[in-house]
Image (cartoon, rainbow, N blue to C red; front, side, top):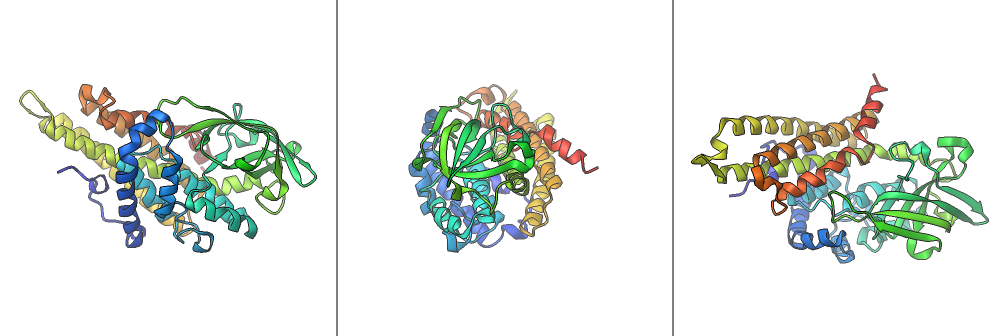
Amino acid sequence: MATNPAEVLALPKPAWAADEVGMLYDMAHRFMSEEIAPRYDEFEKNEMVDRESWLKAGAAGLLCASMPEEYGGSGGTFAHESAIIEAIGHVGVDGFGIGLHNSIVAPYILHYGSEEQKKRWLPKLAIGELIGAIAMTEPGAGSDLQGVKTRAEKDGNQYKVNGSKTFITNGQLANFIIVVTKTDPEKGAKGTSLIVVETDEVEGFERGRNLDKIGLKANDTSELFFNDMRVPTSNLLGHEEGQGFVQLMQQLPQERLQIGTGAIAMVERALALTIDYVKERKAFGKAIIDFQNTQFKLAELKTEATIGRVFYNDCVTRHINGGLDSVTASMAKYWLSDLQGKVVDECLQLHGGYGYMNEYPIARMFRDARVQRIYGGTNEIMKLLIGRSL
């Protein structure tokens, strides 16, 4: 009987994961197993999950789970988003970018959008008619968001936007993009604003390449170009210009916690798969699990994974209660993604030569895990932020 990733650590469920959150996890796990996993090799080859799958996820209630019901969501919290992301990780369809859509893009509209904007956009995000992305990174500005060069100049009741973005998750499919731009370059961070672009309705918007990445092949990641792109001034998030940097700083803790969600889910799947493998695989006449080195190594990994899960559960508890600070979120992002890299690497080693073969899931996990230490702010930046609190 295969080891269940959700039970590999044998920990009691935290209070936030009980009742309807647990039922949502089961439903999301079933959806990912039945609807996404059978086609995942196709999605990897095509380098994107198709729009039909987004619509199916919306119909199944897996989009915007934490948005209020009045705006088409399910009225949940980040705990519900965590259940969905964990199901994605446990099934092994990590390239399906609904986590960013759900718990990064949609919250900007909920927290900073006008009532008209929320009623206009959130229901469409909830059914998958709109697919969300957020355009922060530029060729010359990554973790340092103050270095953004994209410029939005007001021209009557429109903004004229010029600039470019890169490494944009969901970038090929997204038709709803929050663009980080400078409305007043002279003011630095205080001149930053967030402007929503509905790509089906604007001229001057161009998608670049679907970028050729090491891993997460099923997730479309793109360059975007704005050439005198005209956007209504009513698409500004917030009641005035210059609020963008503060808005980003307020939402980044949840983004970083979400990266931790994917990390701990993959850690648990890697352990479950590896435990099953070393029980079946034999060397020198006995199962790999019977060698002391294997037992010691897995003992170490399970211990560290347990520490990571307990820390993660505490972060979620604090977050849904409104108490997750930026420093702790940075700790979660850096430490859990570092742990993810370590566990997946060690588990690949325990697979021996088969771990290097693409037909084994651990090989894909090895590739997919690497970017976790880079996006959402590099782990080096996370340590810098933590260091400032000392």
